[in-house]
Image 1 (cartoon, rainbow, N blue to C red):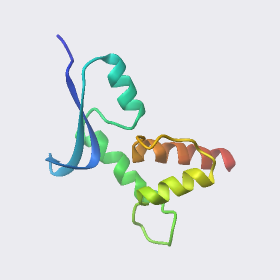
Image 2 (image 1 turned 90 degrees about the vertical axis):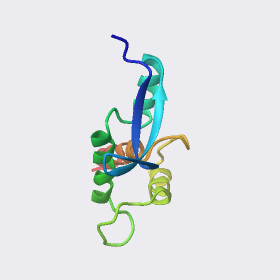
Image 3 (image 1 turned 180 degrees about the vertical axis):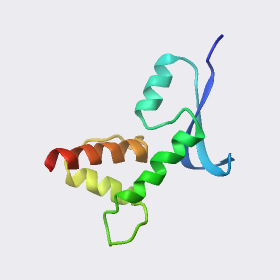
Image 4 (image 1 turned 30 degrees about the horizontal axis):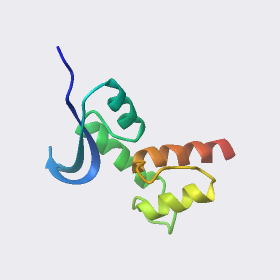
Length: 105
């Protein structure tokens, strides 16, 4: 059985799928799949939704429970000296920030 082409998901896109809004990406081989997963794409909508929910646990401004904005994530990454591409997904950027904060602790 051929697993490709395959659709991947990121929370917060324009397409309504399974009760949420997602961005989608089609990959055609293992190399594209590996690169996309490293960039924060997910295999299922449930996996894509989970990292977006985790963003709320790391609020950078104020004392509210809202998830940090993309601008806040990028500002925190710069503050911590984390290099990232503009194409990196929010979930992947959050992982790098969390790792850098854990290393400082």
